[in-house]
Length: 504
Image 1 (tube, rainbow, N blue to C red):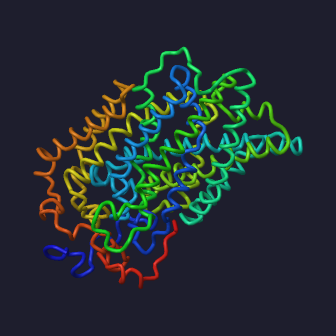
Image 2 (image 1 turned 135 degrees about the vertical axis):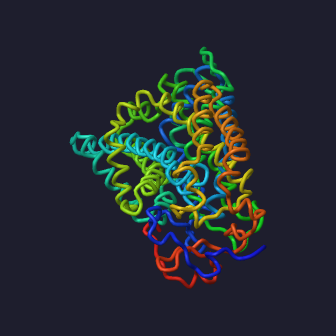
Image 3 (image 1 turned 45 degrees about the horizontal axis):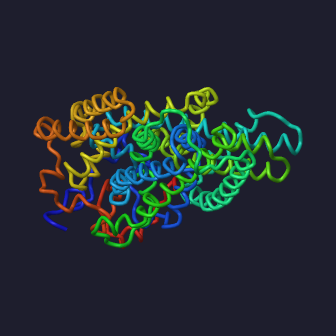
């Protein structure tokens, strides 16, 4: 470690012990507390990629492009987005921080709530959409077997089951994904062959089919990037639980469990599911393969198909919607709002949003919030890499009077960059992700360098980027104790502690 020890390391004291910024589930995760391994992260991504909107994305593409072109474009778009995701993922693997807590750095301890809660509400709405689709599938199975028909009943039951499963902690979420993902893949292969046979009975070759609509390759590319813009920014919520080797000084070594998931599992699964949506459109003129096969299926075939729908919605909701939503609500309401309470709140918000109505305008919904979040991604990359060089004064993220207070709790640079970058992204909606990300990155960097940092000193920068502001890569963990405040302990020291987390 370079330089002198910080005050927190020297005597263990800290002024944040009674801070309203503290709650157990948003404290940094130690290396010894990280449970998601190589395959676990892959299963999580496969489960998250299988959502109904992906089918629609593929169908929209083949309306004007060949099936092969659609698959290639979506695969490449996810590769490019994987670069952004891997960059933001390091916030979790290095410092063990959640998305909303990290946003206290570029937006301020109060300003964080504007982008974070916005993302949380969107995640809650997505939870409602996915739960509604799962409830329809549950209702289809029960109605076929017993004649009982009430999707509302199954919506409530399915919502409660998912909330309880997520409340059991990240281990329970990972376990479900490891069961659901292989099942989903197997059923999706069966879906592909079923739809291909349907197309052939009509004399259609799915690989030579050409739609007549005007579909832009560039438009499809950026639409897919906007599709995952939310997880591109809040991926630290998951990677803070991702296993890393001891003293992983290099970026590649520290994030080795990220690479295969981000650059192979996500692009391949997303392209595969979009392909199935495209084949469904070619074979039956309907982007939803579930509806197409369900209309022709019965008995065991119908039950298996609907089971895939349920597993896909469940595995996606846990990791991609409930966890992000809950953590943003905890961040906003700490210490009064616990992780479990925040999960229930996410379920209530997602239901009150009436997701069955939003589903009819899904891509409009995706486009606008994706545009706004692309700007947040640019700000995060500028802040973490260009300004702080991965160093971070983590104790002050939980200190109401620390360096991240800025102007009464708000960082004007982050807010201005978000408004301008997000506004430009919406104005140029077809290229939203590129416009929002790059413009916000540049604006934020310029404002911080010329305006904010001279007025509000940032210790990690002024220290000459001292290694005392690193964690995992130098064998340290950010540890909070109610009596001593924050300290930075070695892996050996944290391994001896018996602290438990409510989100493990």
